[in-house]
Amino acid sequence: MQRVYLDWNATAPLRPEARDAMIAAMAVVGNPSSVHAEGRAAKGIVEKARAQVAAALGAEGADVIFTSGATEAAALACAGRGLMGAAVEHDAVRAWIDEALPVDADGRVTVVDPARSVLQAANSETGVLQDLPEGLAVSDMTQAFGKVPLAFNWSGAQMALVSAHKLGGPKGVGALVVKRGTEVPAQIRGGGQEMGRRSGTENVIGIAGFGAAAEAAARDLADGTWERVAAIRKILENVLASEAKETIFVGNASARLPNTTMILTPGWKGETQVMQMDLAGFAVSAGSACSSGKVKASNVLQAMGFDDVAAVSSLRISLGPQVTEAQVMRFAEAWLAQRARFVARRRG
Image 1 (cartoon, one colour):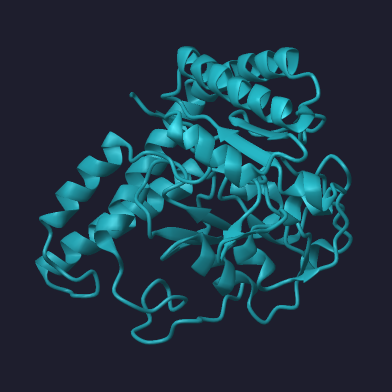
Image 2 (spheres, one colour):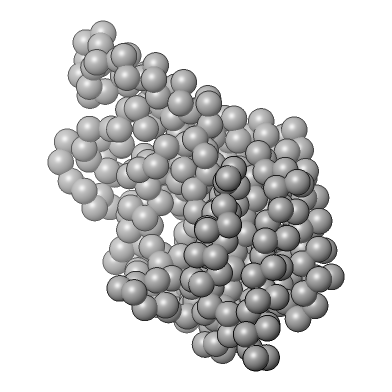
C-alpha cells in the first residue's frame, strides 16, 4: 500500500535543499563563537541562514533570533508582557496570554489594542487568515510563512514567530523575528549568543537547513506552486461537498491557506477518523487534541461557536506541493466509504 501524506500543517517533508545544506554543515567543525578560521566558517553558515530566512520572510533589516522552534520563540516574545490574544491561537502562544480577544463564527479575530495583543497570521487547524493591524505586538507566522505572500516588514507586527519544519526544514529549529530596536529580554542566559537574546551554542546544522528551506519556499511561492495546491484543494472540497452534503467546511467563508481543509461530521470523532484513514494509507490530523487517552474538544472550534460534539468531530487535511490530484481523489474515495459506514451505523 502506497501511503499518502496529507498532514503538511503538522510538518512538511524535508526539502532536498535543506538536506544538502545540513550535510554540508556537518563537515564544519568550528563553534560559531570561536574567532579562528573554523569558528568563522561555522559563523558564516549561521549568518547566511539568517539572511536567507530574513529575505524569504520579507524581514530585511530586522533581527532574526534563532531558537529551538516557534514554541521557544513564543516564550521569548510573550513571557511577562501581559499580552492579549484569542482562543484560536496555538497552545504555545495561549500559554502566555490572556484570552480576551473575540472570535467570530468564521474564525476571524477582533483586535482591540494592537500594541498589547498577539494575532496569528494563519490558523493551523482551519487555515483561516487574519488581517494583522499596524503596531501588533506579536504575530505567529508559523503556518503562513512560505504558503502565502507575507512580508514581515509590511505586516505591522513588532515580532513574529516562525518554524523551520513547517516549510520543509528540519525539526527543532525556529526563529523570533524582531523589528530592530524592539526590546526582547533573554529567557535563556549565558554566553550572549544571538545578539544577547538567546544564549547557547547555535544549532549550526539545523539553522543551515532552515535557511535553505526558507529560500526554496520563497521560490515555490514566487513560481505559483501554492496556486496549484489551492486548485487541488478545491477539487477535493467539491467532491466531498457533492457526495456528503451534510459535511461542514470550517472557515470556508474566510480567506484561508491554500492547502488547508477542515471538515466536521458531528458524532464521528476526529481521532476515529484519523485512525481509519491511517489504516487506509492516509496521514491526516484531527482538529481536536488527544491527551492521556482522552479526546479534547478543539479550542479553535469552540471559540468559533461549535458545540463539544462538533468540536471533537473534525478532520484536517493539509496538502503540499508534492500532493497530486489522483492522491486526493483516492483519499476522498476512502473517506467517503468510511463515512457511509458511520452513517449506516447511526441509522442502524
